[in-house]
Length: 129
Image (cartoon, rainbow, N blue to C red; front, side, top):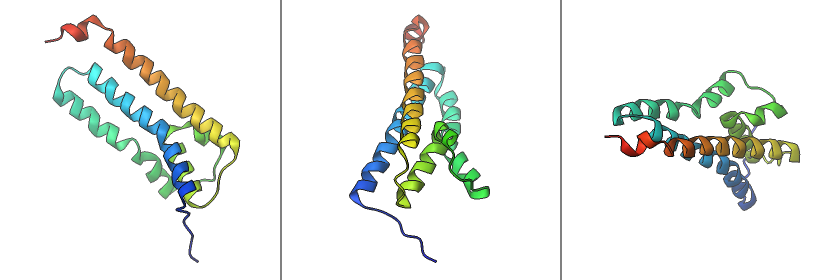
């Protein structure tokens, strides 16, 4: 039994839309790391953890595949994986899944952005040696 993969222009556009909240979350996490560490070595240790984050849901799904549930679309990297797999299978997903995914992704990205902005307003960051 062969599975078909949908690689049409519309599905690629949907995948790019799915990746947009992850772009915001990723860049704000990098900004948070840059604003909160005191040395390059400390930043490098956080980077190795940050690189592992997107892999965790994929490994989890390989070991224990689950059916899609609406709550899964609130978990950042798990939701991204589920959305991309749905798109590649040719399943458009319903409006609720898209709204929950985009709302949770952009909401988390905005929260991290606010935290990073507050960290950059610290006086100690400007005076650090």
